[in-house]
Image (cartoon, rainbow, N blue to C red; front, side, top):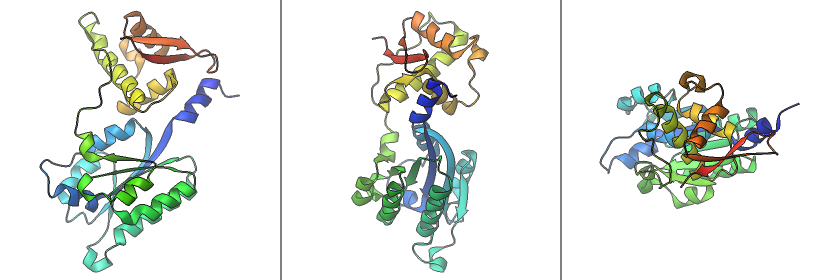
Length: 261
């Protein structure tokens, strides 16, 4: 028998597959200052859920300078020969075929992220939605089709990732917190703020811990002197940072109601 809090967490945590049309991103970057930073995309998507698959499509001889950062982000690079050899839509077709194959073969992946602004992907988005998938689009403002953006369940513009996150009244860790615990409190508050931005309600303790581990896979509360994650949350509440309550529906586990104002 599964515990209620585990079932609740499965109902809210998304599993993501990310497909990047890198040439479309590069087109958007040609006419603007600054360099492409894959970390900004990763950090935003980690707030959405657990990323299972990451693939990027391009003629990598042409975009060689980006391959190192993509490899470091554990993204699989799919080589698409020059368009003069394969035709204009070869990368689009390969991406669409891979996405639909994954949608049919991996039922546990419920969210697909199409990193492109190309309107040619609109039929793919529609087909994924027909198959019960949640679709997130991500692209550059100057190279994104309105048709594609409006077809997705939600669309994120890369330029918005370069801006400071929306104001969330998260507390700052003051000098009253021991130095060896400030790092974990910062991560805790950052993760709760991310869940609040995603309008998650209720925010179960397990969701907070999962978000912390996605942001920092090596995280373990015992390394900061806590016997359990609940003890970490209780300490944060005792110090006047967060508000907690017990959830009867989730088997008595904690729910984070928000920050203390």
